[in-house]
Length: 365
Image (tube, rainbow, N blue to C red; front, side, top):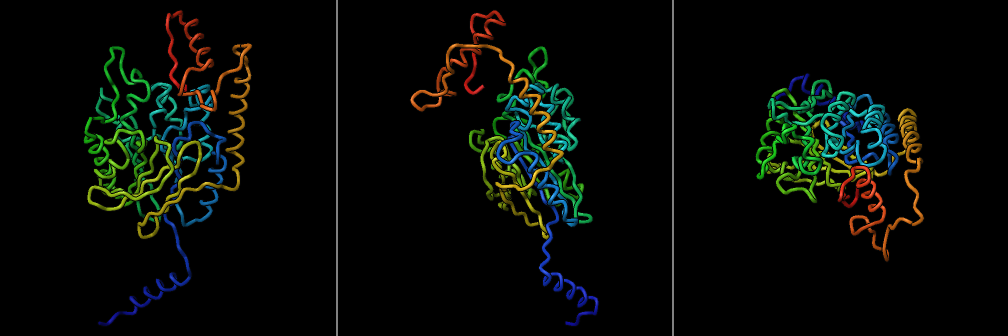
């Protein structure tokens, strides 16, 4: 078989590039989940922002920073600003994509709809639906171009358990009728179909790398609504960035056609930062980063500004008691395990303020 001069030039170029040791990652995806306002915990937003900037110094790479939910709730920084402070920090840190976890709704749907347009990277969810119109509340996915013409799609998925793990009335009208839904059903078939619909739409638009960013989890989640269950009932997905169950792992599972899908989750409160790399051949590899060097000054300045306001508010006395709060009995942590006098103080304040006969405080709050 004879080969022309053009063939040998191409072959020589390929061998030269291979021999040079150049390995280029076309698309790098940094991801977080369940930060829960832990802006100074473990690694932190300022360290993550600097890590992204360092990776972006390679002109060949496209770097995306995504969050898989439960960022704006969990500590006083969130509750005292009703999520605003965390949105401001995420903006300066450079987030490109985020999804609402179940706790993004803890200040009410109306509040989330106020905050969502302020997040520069945007919120996405393919299965959060306004039942009055049948339309998605947020865009289902985001298309990202890389490597001079390739397309990747990031698709958001929010757990249907949100209806019961947040406050149900937030999703209802004045008559108690649900006006928002998450494509939920007992078998999981409806959310599977809703997600596959978004996958197919993105595929038709030219995306050949599809990444699901989900707040579904594994341990503690209903079996039909886990990220593994979703992977097993869909196809064309390269990887799933997950959240909700506060686990740390990267593992391969099989999709509907028996093909491998990488699932990754980073724990909670910056226990780690996830990093996915999609190379020139479409191969996906991931790692959990537990140490970051360097701090982005702009992000750190916003973090400290917001925390200073919160610390000032938390230093204001609201009550004085001549007893110590009980934290443990014989080494057993009392929170979520029994009655505490801190909870007694809280419910007494609720009864006094609302003039009720009974008040209840759930463990952990």
